[in-house]
Image (cartoon, rainbow, N blue to C red):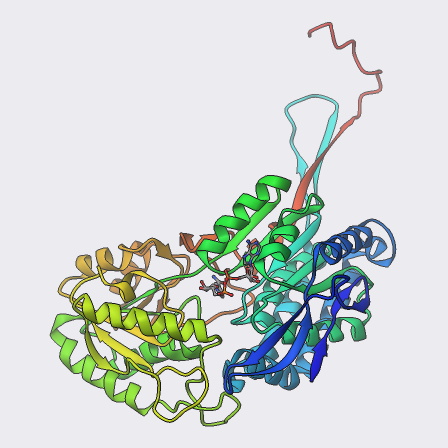
Length: 490
Ligand code: NAD
């Protein structure tokens, strides 16, 4: 059976205490590989290696332009290996191969984007309010970065962190999720092949306790880039009380999609189906609450159910598959009990609500619930599975109020042919991203992140670059006179 070792300081190793985990292929429910699990000694070694790489050796001495070239080479190598990386990600996580291969191919664009930005990080000369002083700022690397990622889009979520972190001159310890860690070790092989100096990118895995805690509270970690669930994020913030690391949080959502009566209905159906059932609903931006204007409610629900019934469920490696398995059995159980609870609370099951007949593996049928109000389990809580809660509204103001009535604020969708309405509603929705007449579009150029309990900080775009630098201010006395007696006030 395939076994993955940890990648620390340019070397491959098992854990000193022999810790390892089994990784399950969700399509079969069978263990298909094992991975070494980092204990305290490996976490310490990885952080020390990253720290060393930033203070001595080739990485520390490299110009920003040369770092950019190295990131470009990493992007090229990821693009070349996209098919293989995507396949491993699919076997390990159950995410459709069509998506993982395409997404991994696109991931290289994130490395290219930040490769180009590496030598455009600049400080400023300040028009200071004192005579004979030359004062300027520099943006310097922030320090060792702990990148902690969930299982659902690891290649992508790694690129959004490593791109700006490395472009800015930092070194990284990447903690792969304990669910589906294999693609990250395949990525580490590429890091080695490309010749990224030892210690600049270290790849480990382990559970939140103790591995994640030890890493994110480590005294030599200066920056924690976290993507995951809101409950874990509370631990991350507490851990950062130990090292005062700057923390960014990319968390979950309960994103609304509003469909107005003037929408192009075919486009809106596609948007809702792709927005919620894409990635089998295991997406942070899943548009899992759809608000339909009352005048088109019945017609629209009918179309949605018709489309959901046509979704092909199956082997995530298959070319025709549209919805694959969920990553873990615990996730299937969570979705299943949440749907039962929603029905008990008054929701009407329009489609799905069960595991598919005669299929082994961790599958769940795409589910649509007609919900009379928002106080229902599947409307309030992130499902992270293929469950859509449908609600209706009469007026634009009501739609906005319902959409904003959530503790989350990551994504939102608006379907309307009225441009002014599209602009008004996108301004009024409290979320980090709004898509009008489209959904789930992303780009290295466009900042990504949430409001409220969906997190803080931004990934992608210029904004992310600054989040991996620290400002340093330099004061130079340009007077020809020696420094004045400090006890004589002038
Ligand atoms: P999770 O929070 O359980 O785990 C995420 C990572 O945190 C894993 O690597 C895990 O080992 C680590 N971790 C757990 N406990 C820790 C601790 N105490 N200290 C440090 N690290 C710890 O999330 P998951 O179930 O793997 O992923 C699903 C969640 O991720 C969903 O809520 C989803 O919305 C969110 N997500 C958000 C985005 C985004 O960009 N906003 C993208 C993808 C996924």
